Length: 295
Image (cartoon, rainbow, N blue to C red; front, side):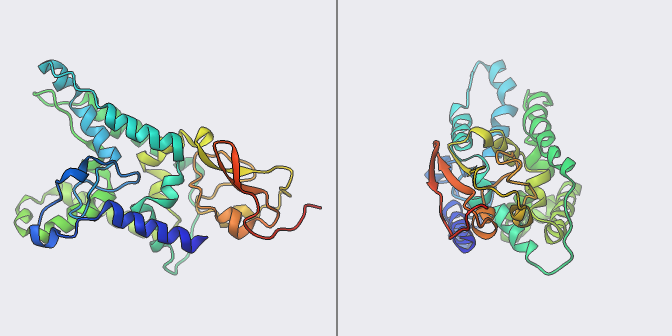
């Protein structure tokens, strides 16, 4: 199952980054596909990106609200909010484990041999702060003289944007070097920090910083597709604790907002058939692997 998930992640990378003419155009794709919402974190300004980033679009919506009201435009981004809401209600953080390009990058980095360290659970709450402050409040409330805000998370924090867009665009358009300032170097430092952290710990950006993961996590308890714990079969052996990349205890918190539904607990750890995939309340996979009966 793990190899299947990896291939699904790779396929998603190519689906949301399908414009391979950028070495010739030396610019980002701006065709009709750009109205499609990427389910995972994937920068709009990546030269190969054929979709838009949910976080970037939400910030663009919020940073222009005051200007829209002042000019009488009354623009409401129901398509943006609806797309992200539908994805969250259907999949929750399933998207983080199966369709996020930056999630796969972190997983590959973590395979590099090195000492591995746990991440203190308290840091998991930080991503909600980034969601509320950098994605919602700052773009909405901190505006210039024209009533326009800034995409704070994309502009000051997002390592995915730097890795997928900032560095590649600088290589494609060398003239952009004249615009490099403290902001660019600050984001390079952030990228380096998360790269090193990803080697040492499992998915640190997803767990401590990603606002999109925080948003999807709000739906985890009530999402349409989820992992289900069969308490009658569970022996409380704790095997699921050892394989979880998010360091949750599935048998204790099956609806955790941190669960990315990678299914490692189901396919690699549980021998008793206590974990299955549930779609709209219907158990799709009860016996993925041979299991022993609970004694």
